[in-house]
Length: 253
Image (cartoon, rainbow, N blue to C red; front, side):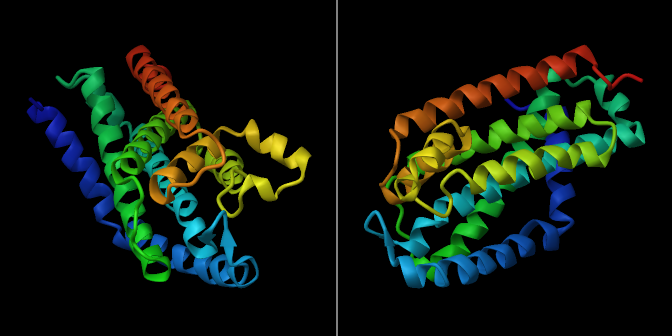
């Protein structure tokens, strides 16, 4: 049963991102619409179909994945870093909450934000390309795993960071580039051999490809590879974030 302290922390974190609906909801709507206008229609007019799927539908899983992981990461990263700056993280660490409950409060709230944004983006995309999902439970499970992994990574980054620039370093130089180079807008079969080889070592490719299989029923790699990678990444990130909280690294003055 969820404790009162964990429930209070979870409510606090959820209310924090709901207080800025323009940033949480309106921004993804505008971004998704722009992606479809720029890519779905301009490129879609030339490509028509990718692997037998209309191009506008083909890019949906990647856009949803990008929205989910970015928002899950930013939610924990911004919340934890602000608490560090204000000094309120010390009050949280000396509260009756266990380290596991503190971690759960941050991660669950971030996952909820990621799923909310992903759902909004999928809804907007559905207006352009339809709402059919090939394997809904698998798609949801993979998206949740991705949100868990990146929310924990966001928490770790905020604990380590000493400035907002460092907090934004990971999404700017890793999440966004690896996602865009991970098959969001193309099939790897369309790439020359050298670029295809790079894509095969990009972990985000397997994540996007797994979600694409869940949503569209097509993939460039075995879907089990994406699922296994996400399980390993989520488990490792949660364990590392828990260890950092427990050690008090950069959190206790």
